Image 1 (cartoon, one colour):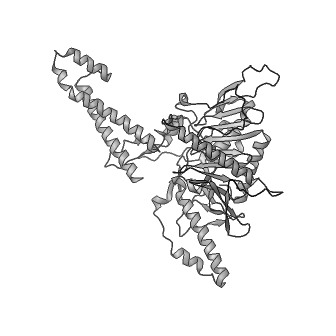
Image 2 (tube, helix red, strand yellow):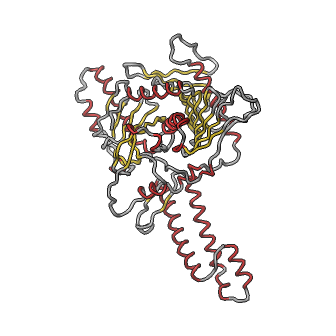
Image 3 (spheres, rainbow, N blue to C red):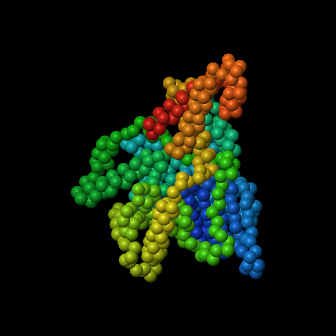
Length: 505
């Protein structure tokens, strides 16, 4: 694992943003379904499917061509893109993987110097105990926590409002191979050599996934205790035993609670490409290419500034200008924004409050226009709220949601089902509901067969028997009923296991 520090993360981020600026990127959007929309200053527009496997590019219209001539359109598999669009795809994937729940890592688009051998597909990582964790203080004031095997590094920003994480991740594999490598079994599998790369993600502390909850608590505890110890030292100049006193009062958690799953790469190919939906404007509509999106968005990159929507009772927009500070709207009072601005070389975080209609004037030499940034954030939030109110019907399932239905294996206790049987459950409540509905349909079919069991011995009810066969699409006999009984028994066990898993989480 390469040495990770706040300075290196900031440099990498600035390099990425400078590359986007020089390549002509004007706007990058990640929607709630994790599809990506990239818009360029020359009028071109590129969209990436939620799974990352496919892209659609609408090239800019020829200025010397006929006004009614349609723009050239290109639709290709991401990993097989031609050299003409390879650089565009690398940029789009870098943006996607930084904020998506699971990265898409095709070997064809990753430089050889960024890959390294990896002898395990185990996505688990063990974080240290609270009492023995040696957190580091980065040069920029960030708090750094490393996993026990140093496969993952967690960094909390000085403001305490956002964090970055760097972890080793195996490259995307074919669906069958990926699913086989991650279905637990009773026998020890021989080690196999895989290719892996380092993934860096950036998240908000107010929208942290479960896999980052424990390292976030570690970093927050050390950041708070470090500040309190320094204040005590400044107060009485005798803080030799302070660190030991703090550690003595820490409460450790079990080994199971400290072992969490890292994000796994998505498969190379999408199991549901027919679910890909592309969001393009009418080519004849005369609108500015930088117009704000009318769909539900998750992340927006514009001129080096990150705008993030946090879903809540009253949606919140969070701004990361790139200087270590964070600006966040105040929930229901969305015309007010709070700026969390850490002081350099100190441990203080100033909180400044702004109103959209009375923003401070720009200062010469300022890295960004505070007035422009907050005004744009207010418009983005207004568009999000409007789109959210107009959504009267449930959203169409995406290919990523379909893939998640059987993407995460879960082994239930032997009391719930035999050890050799495994149930694939979803990572979200919606997918769990879909799985339960499927199992309930099996029970309904069995009940129908059971209620019409008397027809098997009756020759006078031949027409009704044919009707039953037409409804169930299966021949009705004693063997089929016995098989249906076995399937229903397993379905009931699966549903009980899903309910148990849901209550535990």
